[in-house]
Image (cartoon, rainbow, N blue to C red; front, side, top):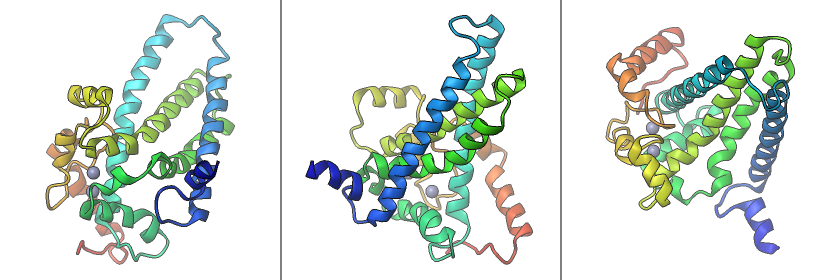
Length: 239
Ligand SMILES: [Zn+2]
Ligand SMILES: [Zn+2]
């Protein structure tokens, strides 16, 4: 019992118990809204589903995987590129973990499931809650497909940090290593490209499928120029 409460409230690391409690509440809220949304999504069809819809849903799962990979890359790019760990508001909680990850890439392996995944659960609530309350799932086909797509995006975003952690493990579980080898989740050698100085490419860390394309079209270089132009005073050069 003492071990369980120690795991839930403090984890294995030295970070504030209050933060740990927020993380656990975030995971609980994420789980509740996922279940509620899932129940909304299955209720219109029962056991039968038209063929066209099955095909549409499979396509949306694939699109959602690409989307989550892109989002992981864009958020990672923002955290790596702008501001410093001392930047007010976003510095300690958002920018610092990205910078620490470059100086100590194996740190993520020492983090437990809650510390690795809770932040993405909390961020995904900003998608899940509006979708659950405002998207017309039962009265509009577009609404139904949108809700399904966004739910898949959210689930893949949840997978992202875990896939990233597995990419840093020396000996991941056998099944995970097989998925990495097939390229279905972020492969370690692919992710090593990002961890090679100056850490300015291959930011996507769900499966990495977007990395080569975004690199070829200079997407992040272009994005950096645009963002610095729009916010010249708030964007400082990397040290
Ligand atoms: Zn990075
Ligand atoms: Zn990494």
